[in-house]
Length: 424
Length: 147
Image (tube, rainbow over all chains, first blue to last red; front, side, top):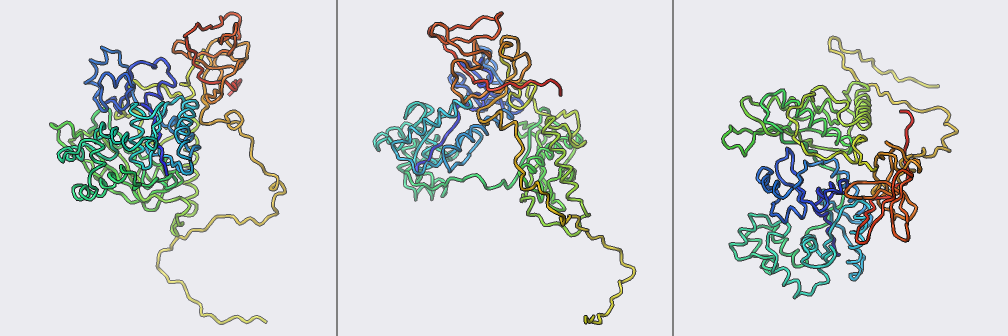
């Protein structure tokens, strides 16, 4: 079955450009949390040699010179645009695996091979027209190859107009193309595997494709062996379709400033627990336990380092913000040690199950559960209507000195009544 | 005649603390069903009415007076669908010099132009080579008189 990988071009930058056309044609970077490093680059910025993950302070000089526009990440906007794109893409196939915020695999069963490129173009046009987001489409017989085809479409190495179907290339053409691509471009071949492969003399995609899969398994693992098979057109990695409910919910952030007191840490942990509990209720699930963790900044090598996590079981599965927050705070008390400069904390909800599958506990206070659920429903409704955090529990605090730095964030174009785009 | 078996009576033990057991509060409906039940239909949804294409619809705030003749006033909320193909006579949101503008899409001497709905504003014309980007088509506006 042919598989398409649809990937949004410079997704975060493209989202910003939809609502701010002034950014068109200008060098634009989107920075990670706390305005740390580049997480998305426009083509103009790529051309200036700015690498993915490059810290902002390192490119500030270049930025001044070339007028690079830096934006803080606006994840609410990207999430909204991603949902729209994925919805549109779901109309093009019954089999969709949303692989990340900006890419998804589509199974193209039943399409005659000569129409695949046309279908790919249709996909591109639909997404572009309806959302303004440009995408590229790679088509091949395996997931690994379709990722590679997408890369070729994007860079213009093969295919045309942003769509590349490896099925249309002859063996000789493929061989030539793959000989020009470094092995590191392959999905799943990271730096470590890449440098070991280089030592073995395998430096291109073609090199790995021609390698003996048995030998590769002995040298690496079945995972890399599967990659070799996939490069040869033998599907080994199945499409994972949606519908499998989340097993865990993780909410964590790095702090804008180092945090030293348990009061500030408690606020952050309460805040993350609140966000996680809201997600949990949205899924219609309850959690059985949670894990709280804190850590210092491993990049500040001169500072004393500490990291610790603890699992706290809930007395019974729950999605109640108050219960989850108090369990998380109890956990935090266990892991907190004074005298460290904390950089990050987080909460992981585990043992998730559908709310309706939970057996009523014989020893619950009568009406407890119904009352808790009703209270949470009211809280969610108010927050939906009046904005996130309108009603929360006091432990979250009001100062939030630890909050992320996002000084150059664009408006909530699709999420805030007061920040909608304006037309004159 | 019914006979009652002579069960031995067990006396509660004395001195143990009481255990509270839940009383299930669910009500069992036993009344006459509402005659309206068979006629229940969905409530009308403004969302569905105003936003047939959820994926491609965005809200844009109108600013200024260039479209008052079309009933679009400063501060009105415009529902904009990017998926629609703009036709002459549509009210569109277009990009001019990097800014959004809302105007009628029109023709002037056979050339596409953007027409305001206010005589105090000028029609925006395009010379050859200049590109007009239509961002979306305004399908409705929402005015609120009181909240």
